[in-house]
Image 1 (cartoon, rainbow, N blue to C red):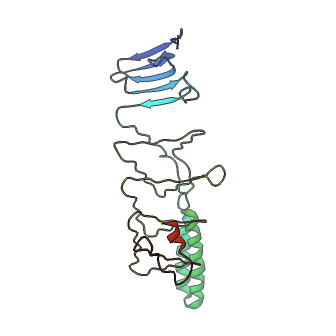
Image 2: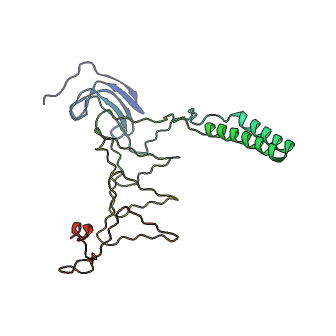
Image 3: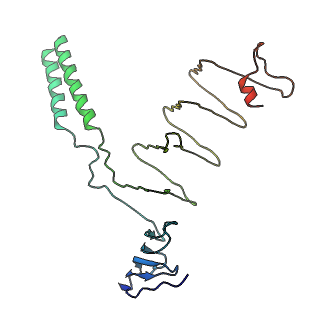
Length: 247
């Protein structure tokens, strides 16, 4: 490839940093705009690429490189939860006063109705507005987050993972770990519309210290302690489907 030329480059800066326009880099690509750190310009810079390969995604790309910590902090002025409605405390106080003054069943009914109004206001008051503070969107292509020598931590009030395929069937969430995948919560619900499978090459334990409920419209339990000519007992019926599947 012939070496690119630019007859109108522009540079401005000091020993602390430099801003360049139209700089031809060592990769023989032209940077539309490049901001470099003076003491560590080769490892600390932001560049907006002008040329490159559109198919590989380098043309029109933006790179931010730094040898230290990269921090993005946003959303300080966003009010995700509405300010508390002063009517909540006022109506609550009225309910307490009405219930105390009237007394008896009538006072209890009025107090209950006012309490319901308070709960409705509180529920409305505590609903988040879901205003994004940081938004990443890839119109085409993948989003890759890597930490080969560290950990990736996601911490939030609530975390949602959603995969939507183009035909309603190709959306998949895959989790793959060399050692362990641990779920720890007060309640763990697993629900599927077609099939749910739990498979282990060695041991599967189901433990309910209090109560274990197992229910199925049609339930098939099979065991095979010995291999060869001794299939599991079927009480005169057909061979177990599970045994056939796992020969």
